[in-house]
Length: 374
Ligand SMILES: Cc1cc2nc3c(=O)[nH]c(=O)nc-3n(C[C@H](O)[C@H](O)[C@H](O)COP(=O)(O)O)c2cc1C
Ligand SMILES: CC(C)CC(=O)C(=O)O
Image (cartoon, rainbow, N blue to C red; front, side):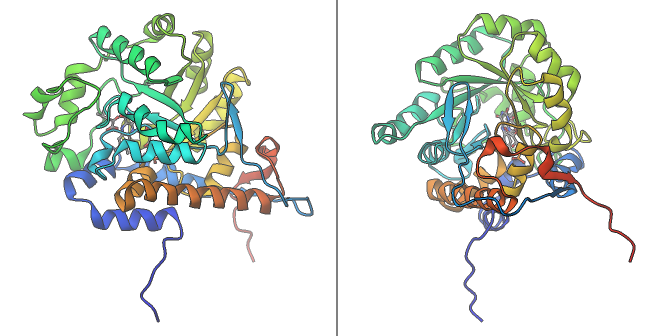
């Protein structure tokens, strides 16, 4: 038997990446907070929904495109904002941004990226001049020093970013045990590229660099009034990232904000909260189509994307799969990730009897049936 193994799914990409990355990076990228319960459940929860396909419908053409804020994307699979991607591969965030652009997918960049937001725009410019469209959103951490956040917003606007994702679930960093046990350091040759040299240097003296950085810099007093104020400071739509309940979903709408990402931060913040797919329905019901609801957490397969769309998400972000893909093969690795997820979604749609995303609704899924007794 041949030992040759072709990468066939996102789990294969993850397995390959885990063999390549060192412990400092794996400890940071991989686990959730505390006992990793929510991070694991984000994935497992998708298996608690079954598909309910319809047959004998014309599925000779399947259109996966979705529209959000007036942009049409070719796929509902988007790149999540995750920090410090040059630890996965020297191309870092630019590899994922370029791949998203080629695939007509949404892209989001973290505040704490290792590539500056201006360099991200430069990296996709050659693709844009070939006719590809890049839709870039900026994930904003709100700093105690508000001028620092306002400066980031202005720069994001100038660099062609078209929405802000304000992360609401990180007033403090979750307890990430592997990083506490072994310490974590941003390697010396890398830096937080959206800031002047030296950003985070004082935190670097602490063995738990990120936790110290967040407690030094990020404002734990952030509340709805600050988001209302932020809304007056920019023309860009603001999505609130990290909503898990109907109550907060309603507050997003009442405070005039523009969208929601149902997220538990990949299980990295409060361990023990529900899987995001289990929180999606109540959030979608609460906003009653007034603003778009997106989701992230645990998406590994095209069928997971399909289930999220069936429960009302407009699009789905993938976080760790992008990091593993970058580690595997840089930009080409992320291309492979998109090929796999898009093909799996296309096939799930076709085999479920739907030919475009607007047809996907709750009738195509049901909670896992309990096995009937024989
Ligand atoms: C290594 C890593 C770094 C992250 N950094 C950020 C960040 O800077 N800002 C943010 O809002 N979310 C961040 N996230 C959370 C992601 O945006 C996203 O919510 C999460 O990864 C989705 O779960 P998944 O990894 O299971 O797809 C990070 C996630 C990971 C894994
Ligand atoms: C710098 C960190 C707060 C980035 C982040 O959001 C994370 O590690 O989950």
